[in-house]
Length: 123
Image (cartoon, rainbow, N blue to C red):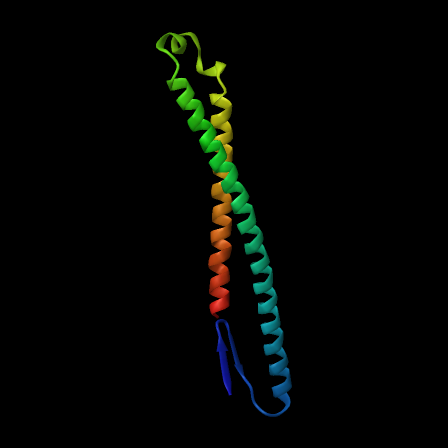
C-alpha cells in the first residue's frame, strides 16, 4: 500500500524493501512526535511567559495612568512650578515601553509556536 506525507512518499510492499521502508517510516514518525513534543513544551513555556509579561505590562500601564491623573489634578500654579523631569513620569513611561515591547515579543512567540503546533498536529 502507499502512504503519502508532505515531502515523503512511502510504498510498503512485501519483500526485502518492506522492513527497510517500514523502519524509515517509523523513524520519521518518531522524529515528528519528538518535534511535536518539543514544540508543545515550548508553547506551554511561551504561554506562561506571556501571562507574566501581560501582568507586568498592565501594571505599568496603570502606573502611568495614575501618574498622569495626579499631574492633571495639580493646580495651575503647581503645574507651572514643576517640570516633568521632577516627577516619576519619565521613569514610568520608560518602564511602560519596556513592558509593552516585552509583552508584544512574548505574544508573537506564543502565537507563532501555537500556529506551528496546530499545523503539525493536523498532519
